[in-house]
Amino acid sequence: MISEKNIVFPQGEPFKKRSVVDVITLGCSKNLVDSEQLMRQFDVLGYQVRHDATHPDGEIVIINTCGFIGDAKEESINTILQFAELRRHKKIQKLFVMGCLSERYLKELQLEIPEVDKFYGKFNYNDILTDLGQNYRADLRLERTLTTPRHYAYIKISEGCNRTCSYCAIPIITGRHRSRSVEDIENEVKGLVAKGVKEFQLIAQDLSYYGLDKYKALKLPELTERLSDIPGVEWLRLHYAYPAQFPYDILKVMRERENVCSYLDIALQHVSNNMLKQMRRNITAEQTYELIDCIRAEVPGIHLRTTLLLGHPGETEEDVNELKDFILKARFERLGAFAYSNEEGTYAYKTYSDDIPNEVKQRRVDEVMSIQQGISAEINQAKIGETLKVIIDRIEDDYFVGRTEYDSPEVDQEVLIPLATAGVEQGEFYQTEIVDATDFDLYGK
Image (cartoon, rainbow, N blue to C red; front, side):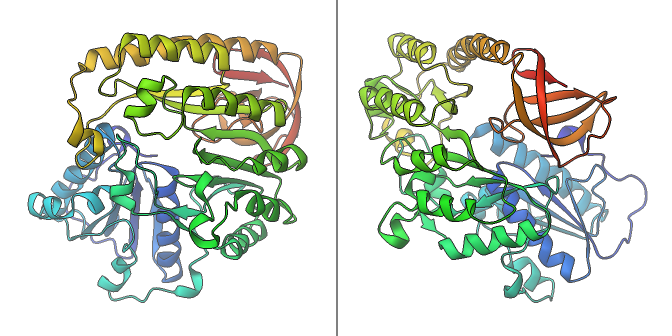
């Protein structure tokens, strides 16, 4: 994703470059899918569309914002302000803002940044086309202009979230959970396979809930089976499962289907019963341990990614120590941690006092990540001598850079293969012997 640090802004006289649209995406992969769908609409209308360009100097600039936590909101606002300055000096002709931030703070943004031609929310961004005098092509709703390497894509299977976690603003922004139909998702995947996509990351705010609203049953296992049956789908990877109401039947699918990666991203957030209750997670420490044990038993060799939240109101040092013990016992292959952000409108914001100093929050995050660094180093060292299937994403410096089935793009570690290796091509799979390892990367041949 682009950040304000690597944007080079246009200098000199106002330009008149027509029919060029620059789309800047901030935030998560779910936002990226929205940007790609909108870009396809502009493509078919004959616009030149660029994504996260180093020199965003098109006639039209569209910023797709994130409004999840403090740091993300700050990045979005700073980016809008920088382009608003360009708009004020007529160095861009139109400036539109869409996404989570404007969904959440529409009225405030309209008042405070009038240089923006128009703000759109999370779900009405196709109105940008109408406001430019163009027609939205409903027949292209399953098509996207991929911004990722052409061999992988993100597939958003639902919108919204029905959970009531104390700290989370996502339901405020996106509303209640809305599953797409199985057939709709199948058709999208088939279309992408026809264009050469081999690897698919299934994403949602809550994979576990998929289907319950539309079909009155948890349908993630069936959806995954049907997608894995599509010829040309070589890897399917699952992101953002929820531990409560977990769809246990998915484990059988993962174990038996070769093209369903032995990888699961399941955000646990904490493990002490004190914090799980205050966070309104609807699960206990005992149930959490049982879930992890079950997943590892049902899918031998699975790699688990989780996210943890430190510094939530009411968190004690005893809670943190219990979480550290859990990390040492569970030995997650992939783990991220972030500090609590006191978000307006959430249950925690209205109910608790944000009384843990920021430096204490960050110290707890750092301590957790230090433990994880040691675990990751040990897991990686154990892979030396193994031969793993690796897909090549790109060339960087002196290496081909790839990933195993245990690694998702952008967030997980990578496999580095010397550039001198003959016959290696981007987007292809190779059996790769792991010859060395660091804390967060592997080296192969």
